[in-house]
Image (cartoon, rainbow, N blue to C red; front, side):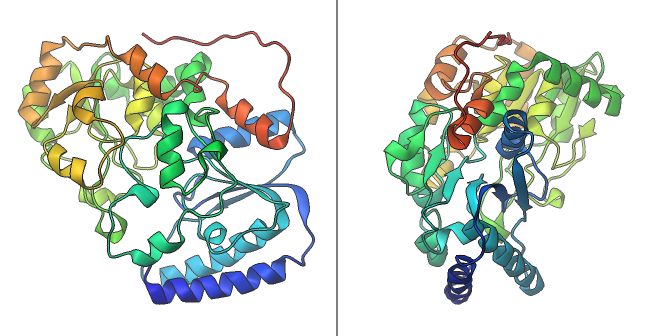
Length: 388
């Protein structure tokens, strides 16, 4: 968004906010909003379920309205922002999982609580206000303002999220990542696995290697990860291995070559569900590494551009010494690591303890109770599953 678009949108939404402040206020209305995806997924999906469980009569409004490029796309998005501004100014609780423009243009009414449950489970690559300075100066001027609270997966993320999301650290709460509850629900995992195997029977009885990298760049300039050659890897692996691709949902599916894969998952498919059929994950700087660590399964990190990535966008941890997994530079090294099958999983427990202390299978309910002001039960039978 350029300065002219920012100034126009800000003026319009501020004026509308002042008008909407005189509309009836519905304290019990809960808004789950995202400009990231058109479907309810991730943290918002788990919070939606927890809120329904705690209060079956809860008044929930979903605003799932991704940003659009091009003139007509931006005009349509402006109309969605007007709708979002109305709900922001007339609702008691607003929960978002990404930047959401109506929140950032001006302070909201004090009766409303705005909570950020960022879609990543930990702090790996720098983002938000900690990201690299680009020519999008307008966005840096207004993004990530006016959150009342930010929810994170554990203590180690509080400092990075406070800095990246322009929020005082005492308002960054280590309540856990709601979406990680999935890994503590054995029945849900079995059901997801069966559903994927029914849909892709060619995966049955094989060791599944999932390639799921993050993207490079930002905005319209997003591009696929470099260097990975699926056809080459397929030729190096015996038939008992199945090679699966899952691209990032915010990346153009056409940006990634699909030759060589046994299965190509839809970009919008839930990655955590794909993990249920996965034996070995190949990725790079994706925050999915945090969630994968909960399964204690082999990880290959293909990072030929590590030095470049350390500089831009940069990282919150020392990737060379603090990261789990086997680090490689090219496709042949990926194949060699898989075929050696001598992965060192000894560091996973410490990694999970450091980054995901509050992601314990009860994060969704804990977050929902905190902001619905519902007391927690005095005692709870813990039935967590440890995945080896």
